[in-house]
Length: 117
Image (tube, rainbow, N blue to C red):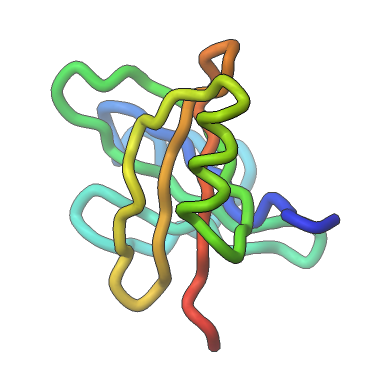
């Protein structure tokens, strides 16, 4: 696959409740990654992800992040194909850059350009 899904994210208003629920349900060993984020380590047969505590009027959501080499070019292509930009390219210090778009049906999809190892 040219641009694989490399990360998932689940957002909701109560990080503690989500961590407890998904930890108990799936046995996920969450790793704190800031005051509003916890990482879900990748397993042998799956990708890693994260849980984000949302704020304000942001509704709960589930999204995936797709690996890209050129974040701006891929975001521009998505928009040209009918998507709407949700989050402009934004740096994640020590990780890389991400952006979010809503596809023509309103699904939010993330793009991630990781920093070289």
